[in-house]
Length: 220
Image (cartoon, rainbow, N blue to C red; front, side, top):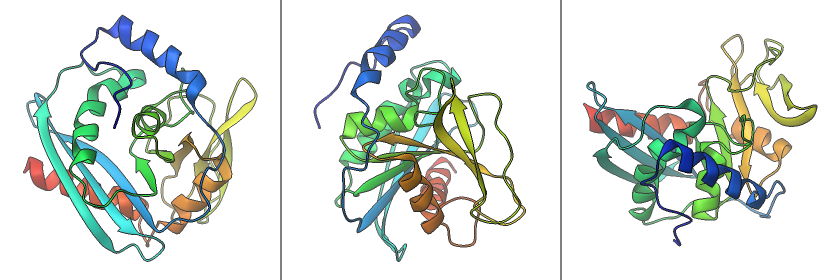
């Protein structure tokens, strides 16, 4: 894994790094087959000083757990929603390095390109890991989203300056939708398709759900 940039930066430097990386994002499908899919999640200690990263790798489409890696560290960057990757990126990259099985695609609990700067956590991590990545967030960063119909699979586009950058996707009937966007090396429709295929009766896709369980277990 070749570092893209230092993590120990100021807020102003982080913004400049985001802007510089934006042009390197690839928004087309760069793979033909998926056998493994990963989910990355971060939990925080009650006092907010420490964070716990977890990445779970599952078989696809069976969704059987193949590998789990966890890592603990200190929080070193302030909470700024549009700069989440600088807060959680360091622990996620360290966690990824501990995996014995590297996934074909990663899902992150954050935005892809449906982001004010066009590069959310999933896009940043996809670039850093050089992997196809998908952003799967519980709340939007872009305003103006329309809620989809009540059935699983219903979705409405998320647009930025008139361009489709994501989807508000219903992953379970009559539950709150998720906000899906491509991160890197994948297109929007494939991102939606993989999220739906990764759900097993829950709102959250299995790779993220199991990564969240693993990070919470570490915290507790």
